[in-house]
Each structure stands twice: as structure tokens, then as C-alpha cells.
Length: 329
Image (cartoon, rainbow, N blue to C red):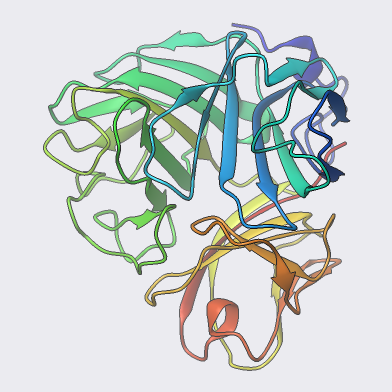
């Protein structure tokens, strides 16, 4: 499948890919409003800032909107008329968790093709919505209950993979290349440290074509339908890596100035911290419903700066995994 026109770049490749990521803030109005990202999102993530509320991760599956809750084990729900995907962004259609009157929100958008492609690279066929030049993809599949592989649609090996059952209450297993081994996981819906419980990746790292999933356990391949996303680093646009806490302020050099960053301690119980340039020195959490609070965090010309006083992002001797993206619109 050729990429949707909105994702195609012209001429020689230089700089970040077009129409790949954007972030903005908005205020809910309990009615209709449009969010202009400059492209048609494949994934839209909304989180209330001013009050406690769920993280809402919505996605466009061939014109049908669905959503899940990264901070919860709840099942997938249908968007209905509450949200629609346009060529330039998102239309919010009613009062809902991402548009209550006077509440303030942050909205994240990743660009992906509007239509999926059947991918038979793995032993289980997936439907992939992949933007290889941006190193990002979304995929769906039906679990078999047996050890298996699934195609992710990218052309390089994913460094970050997140999977969730769609119709079953379950955790959100997370693979990150910076964990202690390919038998480890984190969970979006938990502040727990990495563990080897259920070994969702069957002690096998992803390849440039497939992700290995455990059929016996791990909430990645029971006899249910699944949704997932996968990312790898792209120069000047995205980076997935690790750093060691210093106990004093330090800049994490990733080679470019990001606009959105996730950080999680690998070996300690602590929140998934979420930062973005649209909100400045404020923190939200992937695994928690709390509204935003003040936090000393900086975006620099070559990365991001973590403060000296936070064990959540810079505890002395602790290892942290991170994900970072730069706005492309």
C-alpha cells in the first residue's frame, strides 16, 4: 500500500519526516471544536491537565474511531460521534472525557496512513498502519493462544512496542530496547519496575519485520483481539534510549530538541513521567489519572534536562528508559 498523500515527502530526505507528530493544548467546551495539527492523525492521545482524568488514546482504524485508556486495564470503546479525524487534525463533537467545558487538556497526535495493510510477515496476520520513514506504526491482530510472531510494518527494528487487548481487561505490556533483557516488560498502567512476569516477548527481541509474542501468558496473545504500536529512532525526529541518574541536574543528549518525552525508571517503582513543550515545566503521568503539577524539566537544543531533586527522573545510579519526539508541523 502506498502511503496516504499527507505522509509523502518530496525531494531528497533531510530533517524530520513530514506530518509525523504534533502536540498542542486546548480548553474543553462541551460542544464542537477543531484541533489543527496540520495533518490527519492516526493516533490521538488526550489528557486533562486541570483536573484528574484518564489518559485517552484514540486511533483511526480505516475510518472507525476507537479508544483505550493507557492508565487503566479497561477494554476498548467506540468513539461514536464524539470525535472524528480530518485532513488537518481532530474534530471534537460533544462533551466527553477529552472535551469537558472549561477543562484544560494536552493533545498529542501521530501521523499514520488512513487505511491498513494486511501484513503476513509473522505467523499471525496483522493489519498495519505504518509510516516507515517516521519509524512508527500501529497494528491490530487476533491472538492465537500459541507462541507466534506478528508483523509490525516498519523497515527497521522497533525499540518501543506497546500492546493491549481490545475486548478484555488486561495490562499494557511494554517492550523497550533499554530494559535489562528481552524477557523483561514494563506496563503503561503501572508504576512498577521492570519484571520478567509472563515473559510476553518470549525472550526474543523484535526484528526489522516481526515482534515475537508469548502464547501462554503476558497479555499479548490470548484468544482475543489486540491493538499495538511500535517505534524506532529516526535521526532528528525521535529517539528511544536509556540514561543513568546522576542525582544532580544533567542534560540527556539525544541529538535534537524534542517536544514530547516519556521517562520511566527501569528498576524502581515510580511513575511514567510525561512532558511536552506545549505545557513547559509541568508533569503528567501515563499510568495515573492526576492532573498536571509543577516540575523542573527543560527542553534543550540537543535533548532534555532532568533536575537534581527527582528520583522519578534522575535518582543517583538508577537507570531510566525514555522516548522522545520532535514536532514536525
